[in-house]
Image (cartoon, rainbow, N blue to C red; front, top):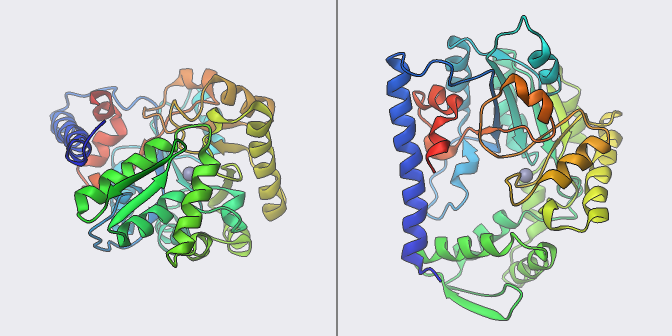
Length: 350
Ligand SMILES: [Zn+2]
């Protein structure tokens, strides 16, 4: 059992180690001491792209970057010789012996409205293609986004009494440290097989406190018409991200496959074409493994992406359903970090 201070300390420690790694790698690469580290390039992950807004309690700050940082990142990557490549064109790029890399591939998860408002103009200015991974349940407002719901609920509460599956636990959430600890506790509990029932309980609690979980989705996520319009622009593509945004590795096999198939069909209704790409929700080793990689292949996708950090190599052609990505992370929004992030090295430290 960890107390709130321990949890907060671990969060800060991990961030400090990565930040230290970014500074170190940034310095070393400036000195020409990191040759070859960037491999064949990288697939970058973004979520929200919007102007900075100061919030005291911001448990998912890492999921937001500013349009200026995105602009600076692309400028820096281009200057470092990265070629923009659309995600579905990546296998051809890696297979082409004339391409020595590095590629830069941009992906944005969850279909936030700010992607159209703030990221699209940046991508269009630079002529960079991008793929937005959308969850059908968010598009249709049938599913909530638990981390957004929790941010609102814990943010306004002085205590958080919640049943994670084995009876109610009451956590104080008066101070910021306590709020972060309660959020982390919920986050951990959700990496289990009862994720949908935990989210349902969270939603009910939020509604009882005057918060509408699907209202948040309606405010934050693009609807069908907006997605259709965006997908018709030359640089935007849509990829599958399931229906309910559940941890696939914890679902029964038929439910896991149904989540993927239905999300592919839902996108086909919007764009007229089945998506060629899939992003596993959460995407780390706890959320997707060999069973999910095989399903993505069997269900006809060209490739699928995880959130396991790492750069691209030609050998990735052999593991097209477990491609690694690098998060363009809200905690590390400094221009000099981008080249270091693209090396993937700082993530090997934690
Ligand atoms: Zn997602």
